[in-house]
Length: 271
Image (tube, rainbow, N blue to C red; front, side):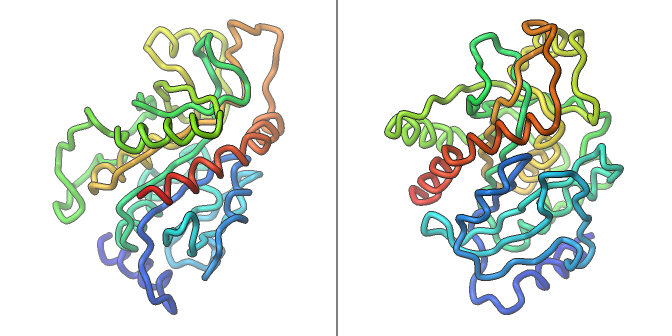
C-alpha cells in the first residue's frame, strides 16, 4: 500500500513545483468553497490512479491543488463514505495519499444532525472529540510503522491550537460557533428518534456518516486535525413530526458555506 500511496501522490504532483501544506475535505453542500481556491490543478477522481469515485449527490468528485488564504492546499471536493460500499481502506485512501503529498494539517467539514438542545439549524460546530460508531476501525489490520504507531493515543485528536484560532476568528467576524462531540456511523439511513436519544445519552452533540475514519487515519500519521460540522437538522425527539431529506441537508450547508469559507481562509492565513 505504501507504494500505491506514493504512486498516486506522484501522479497528483506531476507538473507542480510545490507540495501542499494543508489538506481540506469538503462535505455535503460545502463544495462551493472549492470555487474560492486559486487552482493550479484540478483532477477528476476517476482520472487519479487507484482513487475511488464519489457516488453521492452534492459531492463533485474533484481534487483541487492551489492557493487559499495564502497557503498551498489540496482540497477534496467531495469525499467517500462507508455506506457507498467502499472498504475503510478505500474511504481513507485519499487521506493517506495527502500525507505523501506533504500535508501537515487536515481540515475536515461535514453536514451533521444536531442533538444538543442548545444547537440550531445553520450553526457551525467545532468538533472537540468524536465517537467511532462505525462497525470497523480503519486501522484494523497489519500496521506499517512508516505510517504511524500500532496503538495511537486518541486523547488529543482535534488540535487545540487550531480550535482556539477558529474561535478567535469567529469572534472577530461575529460568527456564532458551537463546540461539541461528533459521532460517526454508517448510514445511509438517517437516525431514528431512538438512535438520536441513544447517541445523546452517550455524550454526542451531532451525528453524521463521515469524518471519523478520515481523522483517525490522519491522526495515525501525525497530521494536525480540525473538524467542523454544519448543523443541518435538529434531532427527532425534539421535533418528532419533522422529516429530514438529503436536499434539505445540502441546502442548509450551502447557506452556511460563506461563513465556513471565511473561517477556513483566515485559519489558513494564521498558520
